Image 1 (cartoon, rainbow, N blue to C red):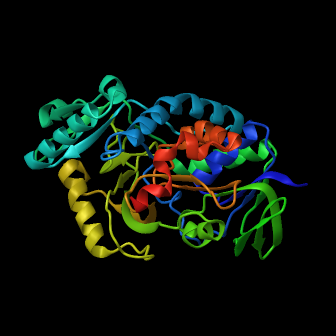
Image 2 (cartoon, helix red, strand yellow):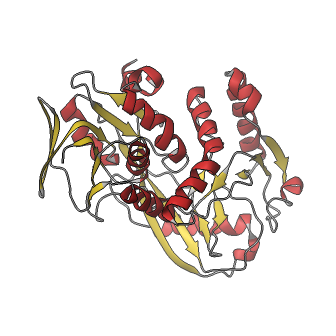
Length: 368
């Protein structure tokens, strides 16, 4: 059976688009590489976040805010279809500022962002709170914290359960799924596109490259940008502890199971995903500074994962002008934008209007 769409990459970006296309009645084939590939979707903190998104590109903040507003309905629908609880919560979030200089820079950048967009001026809500005011949101907060920005738009989920739910829901909708199927080559044909893999050739009328760092080699084969690079982030995970009603932060959050995730590093380390002792020590010290009661908590594991970054850090959505029907999708905010990817972005692909409707995110901006 010939598919309407061939999707390369089964991370959270590719899976959300797959789910959206299937819901629209399309026949979709997904080719996903093995578990040894450089996956970002399985190594993140699970934040569904708006704060800090789009500084320098207001359109990205607008998109992130719209995605955040769509997340509750998206989570409900996906959980109902798949039978999987995403552990999604949206009671707001805090981005911590450790000192006065960081606080002043944050306030200035958010004011500037709101002034750059009438939509954000009306709808992007945030407030700077000093340490005393934060205590109601972050019980147990350390004394050596200046404050932080609060926003009602932010939340968090379990990213592994999100991936599982997207796959389960997509398979129920008729997905043709090929795991452990690394793509070796992509080529245009008279009737669409063909992907060459160790399991044979797969063809479809249209093709979406959502392969994360794999896009560096694959996207240029179809006349699209391969300008992506890895940025390592490391996370510490504590033992399970009693649940505390604390809002999530990019620096630390408590999961439904009681473990604390401590992270938020950005390291240029090439393709090295190792967890390093120096960064683990830094994260542990930061975690205790935020929540002193973690001083004696046991660390049960640590990991490093690679974010997929574009030259300016913003998403890359483009249609090939050389080979119409080929699309390139890449961003490091796949969890936050999952509701958008499964709806508006999938619909733009279906209409073949990606470059028109989301022109700001084309790779043409890299040459300006």
